[in-house]
Amino acid sequence: MPDHTFHPDLRLARFVPRSVVGPRTLPLTRWITRVSAPRRPAGGEIVRVNADVHVRVFRPRSVEGPAPALLWIHGGGYVVGTAAMADRWCRDLTSRLNVITAAVEYRLAPEYPFPIPLEDCYAGLQWLAALPGVDSGRIAIGGESAGGGLAAALALLAKERGEIRPVLQVLSYPMLDDRTTARTDIDPRSLRLWSAENNRFAWRAYLGPASGDISSLAAPARYEDLGGVAPAWIGAGTNDLFHDENLAYAQRLKDAGVPCELHVVPGAYHGFDATEPKAAVSREYREAQIAALGRAVRSAG
Image (tube, rainbow, N blue to C red):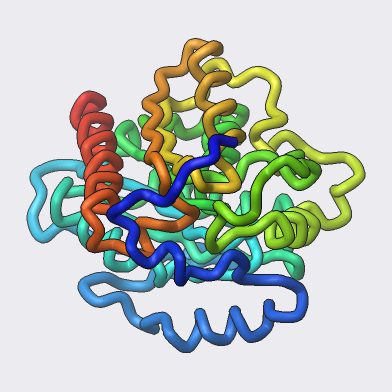
């Protein structure tokens, strides 16, 4: 992992905590996330997919013919977070790209370990593909952090099941490889918002009983044959714990013949674009994702 100072645009970096969640703080973190999130999505609606899963849906004001769509998956290390965290992002994507956007509320570990969160996301993808007004041939999937890990796994699961073929997977500093928990060579002083301790706790929670026999759909970096999976856009900061595993996954996709655009931000920490959304480097990062999504849904039309 490169040793970089923080990007000059990220002026809050020295004040941002290195660690955010652990076994002792999990209940409090969940409570804060829950009470701070809007119950109803402004400009959108909540739709029940099944008894366990719902989505927060945003629709373009006007669109001719079947519209492209995006399934977005929130982050939080598989243990915290809510789909409401993505409301503003989803509204922006819907408005700018004329896509129907759905943020999926999947169940969280450790109460619901792998494969439950992934199957919840797949249920959301199936629902979106069957939604009247959606062009099922122009569906993208994406997420940040653990949501990026779930999006990568969802792309692999979609490849295996052959029912839906996403046109793009947008993986923003995705959590892909449980083996990063064994690394001891990463300088903790360069990390923000997600530490090695956070990572070990979250992977133990997500893998649950499967921790002795880890499925490659739980940790996509373990997946052997990436050929035929959806094209990808992967973003990572050099001061992110996931930097190395993200670059390795991007290279493996390319080696397998999968188109993959890699966007590396020097001096960016984990979640920098959500923590400092007005910073120029954060805006550029978000614009790169929007541009990739726009190209993917247009070229598939």
